[in-house]
Image (cartoon, rainbow, N blue to C red; front, side, top):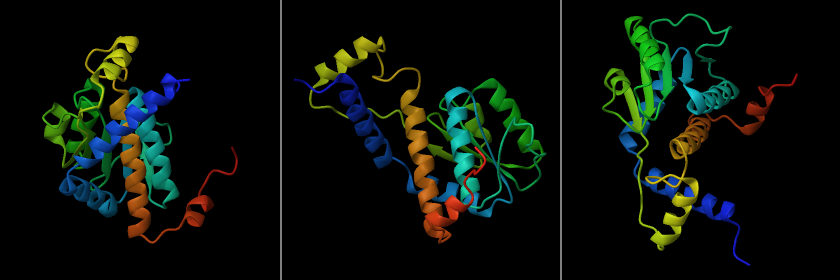
Amino acid sequence: MNQHRVQEMMRLMASRIDAIASHLSDEEVSRFIKELMEAKRIYVMGAGRSGLVAKAFAMRLMHLGMISYVVGETITPALQKGDVIVVLSGSGKTRTIAEIVQTAKEIEGRICLITSNPDSVIGKMADSCVVIENYRDKVPDESVEFEIRQMLGEHRSFAPLGTLFETAAMTFCDAVISRLMEITSTDEAELKGRHANIE
């Protein structure tokens, strides 16, 4: 019996994530980590599913002992000069996000963008930009990928509505946390000590 199509899609997604990781810029990643390390406070934001990835990243930063907030939450304090906003936006041009970034620039906050579109309106305002390419590597059997894309009704990508960007962004953010754990010599026990205990 053939492997279930869900497993096939997981493997296809994993191959795309691997290709994206191979094409990440070392310089961009290093600059991003430097911004995080030097920040007084870190704010994160994104719209829709990217916003969910942003929230997960903020939680991990808090577990790491950094001061992090999610833009738009009721307990998020006012941004100040020297604070960093990490923006997750595949298009880099979501209007509501761009307006907040413009305000943050006026306050002299630092903007770190994770995107697929560095030449976007938010990309042009960013102090640091990590580009997660919409990269398509060659697959051994193009007809299999074509069938998957047809099944999903998606003709340019096998995954629906930006899923690959969000999945890659989540993987990238978790990898950044792992690297920050190394840099700050933080072990998993310390992270567990900051984990929610009243859920």
